[in-house]
Image (cartoon, rainbow, N blue to C red; front, side, top):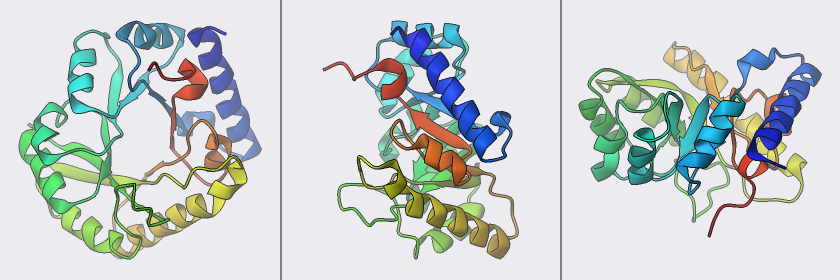
Length: 223
């Protein structure tokens, strides 16, 4: 299958998952994960209808922004503070903020207001970034008081599994945590970034607003 054909197949699956969940497909943004893909692949996906693209590496994002035309970029990887200047003000959303220091650096460099999400490591996996569910409220309060950034919601990545249903408890926990934070902070946190190629339909059933899909659209990553 071509990239365009895989994109259309994913779009159809997202739409069908929304219908099953009683949701409007317009509520769910497909963030097409273009990490390590050439700019030509991004352009092919965009021509097929993809509008939002996610990158994991700041320098790769900067190079592709100059070469891929008018698309919306998301930064979905772990971001070092010294690379914040390559991302702040250049993307629609930073998905994986895990410290108030990073939020402050993004705010200082944004030249406006940079929307961000808190990355929550619900399984406490040592190999992944993000804060624990216990620490998330304090970080949310700190980011809410940080100039130049706006907290829009939460992001998570469950442990890998061949069974999509294994992700459901983590997605349900993230939504519950978001709902509790909205109430305690008295602000709207509309974004739940959760679900990837193997489990995005379950994520949509649990309330995902952004699903991060790479392999199902581009195939296996180069190299």
